[in-house]
Length: 491
Image 1 (cartoon, rainbow, N blue to C red):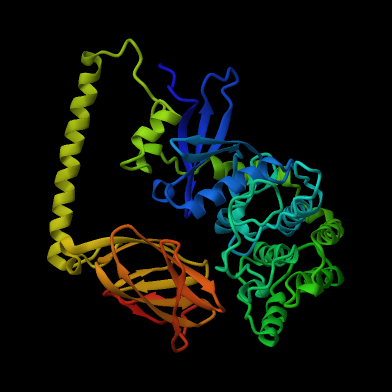
Image 2: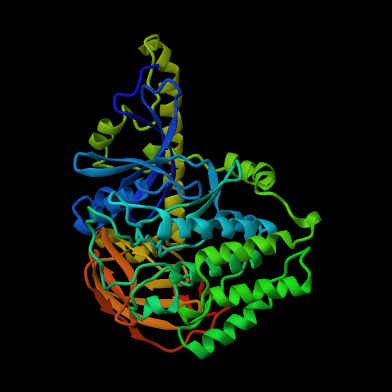
């Protein structure tokens, strides 16, 4: 088997974010055949200076932090002026994926210990990690949530994705923006008011994360202080931990109440949270206290091993071929050996061609049937699009759903809609509804942001255009429901 031509051999895709794709790769020429993770900026953002600077800043920031609970960055590469961040490869599962298996929350001891270690990582990033001149980096993550915390198959907790982190270090390129970035419902109220961030915003997010890990529920709190506290107290009644006595359970609820306090001055520091969580952990009855290593071996490992394997060639499209020839010899790393000749490949070519023909015929039959009964695809009603349709990429907060024209999406992704002026309806879990508009063109990036104390649309990362608030929406078990024709109807 031939060796890859570039410094890495890309093996599989771990996941895709708004701006980048994370791959697992093997270091070419390494006798230990070591694996790393590569965070590669998507080709659509190569010319976006703000996103480029933010990617480089994240790499420089993490390269200065050495802590077992923070993903390690080894170096930042530039390939054809496109940044590639070389990171520690964590064999593990994000907490939001674990919650899919634990609908009512993780075991109490696991939830408490994971957030305890997360709080220690936040303290080190802000107060103890030093820059080149010996000054604290003052790192504030600003996007703590279950999907940004990994639990490895060995029981290690790793905080990831510092893409919108704030820090004080030399060489920083990205400038502070007025647009508030983050994920509701994990964002502290003051972040929506444009107040300067301090470490307490991460404490708030950690508290919201702990509540979700313990209960399996989202806690959508209002930005109104009175309603915020009332809703918080009501939700804390769902916190119940087997093996924890009622007095200790009330201590846990009080800690959550302080971590998620509306006023940031009432919140404890991250190191105080870690100390209190450690005491709560050891107050759990030993029969219910499972160690992270055991949980990882019995639960995380099987989930990790059963993950869907995504080949790089299935993700990277046109325009990436030359780039990946610079990074790696092939998208999959699989190359024919010297003994493979045309006669040995002939049976496989025949079978491949036959499979292709059969698949094409099936697709044509299905397409004819769909057209006959007027069924649309996932991008929108097929009968309404024709050749004038364009692809629009949508980036939504975690608590929002959207109807764009006749297409409905419950989360971030793309829709295919007619080109031209387009009406947008935003629906939030808390019951508010907003109306916006934009001109749809192909490959447009539409991001829902909170700016100037209201929700709006940022087109191709430009200034946010405000939306207008509409009537309240009634919900069906916390979710909006599309009707049979694909149009949106509140539940």
